[in-house]
Length: 310
Image: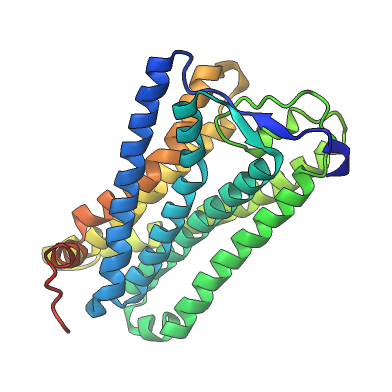
């Protein structure tokens, strides 16, 4: 970081040019944040308080809700602050912290979604081994591995990215700090080292993606062999929300980072970044709540203050 010691702060991309639009964006982000806090907070509270929801599926869902909360709280508060006070500054330390948390929660969310896919696979394809493969200790170890892997990945990227010499100004073409924007400010070929780390991370993500696809092929084959229509409906009701969340998460992130250069523009990049950093944490609780009757009942009981004791 010594080569970049002259940079005291970065300039983030403004969400709007006029004061009226800035205030409008502040109100929209405030509403979105409150919706995400409410939805994910209700899931966390419902799973924690509802003893009948202390199962592997809901345990991982609780961890996913925690990741969603951290993800949206990493980028949105600073964007709200800048819109409200008509500024674009973020301190050097603040940018480093935001970058670390962004990679950390992004990675933890994807690892948790992969583990949740394994949970669904074992539940439907190997139901007799479910208690053995997904006992309480195994679930705790898998969740801890997801968080630890995400932390280590974020730490490596943080140390490597902020060790690069930056000599192309301090203006970032994004409303939050992210690796591609900081690499654009680098004046050294050492940024190739960070690109190598990014390639390794992408390879890990691709491996998880292949695992998810393979698992769902096996899941759907098993579900279609279930003789009763009610059994098939119950199996699909537990898989489709997870599949929808995975699709939403991957499609937005992949489009943000893998779209062809010729279709890029500042306004498009800004819209896509809002899409992948804000929309999934808001929609995930809604997707899971709509299809899961147990979760809906638990949330309803939580709101009315009448949790049934099981």
